[in-house]
Length: 195
Image (cartoon, rainbow, N blue to C red):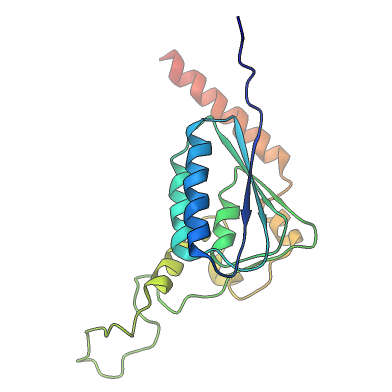
């Protein structure tokens, strides 16, 4: 009788490209297939220049959020990351980053409620023209809201974020916190199972 050995780590490469929306759609489909197998861990290696489009990053976020609770995600930034790519990296349960790599995200041209940041001079004008709002920019504003769950966007937008800052806020190399959270969640699961 054959016994299955537990799957340890599935590796998944995500090349960050300055173009290629189809590439991201295809990679998201493949990531869903990897996560459907419910591996114990998936490592997403992020490498390359460019930026993941905001809509693709939000879609990847929804895929990662709907994974099995037993699957841990490790995100490995092998290159500097910018824009919506930062959000995908932040979604890892454990985050790795090359020592000299940096994070960067710009401010959005939309406010938190989705309106253009320019003040209307004519209070009568309330209708938006199709040229006034870019749907991609609205998605980018949503990405910034999600990034704000991990990093203070207002303070860090438009600045290069280096490894010491990421250490300081506990996003990398924080095994003590990771161990504490893992044991806390294990105890919570045991309590729930006992009921």
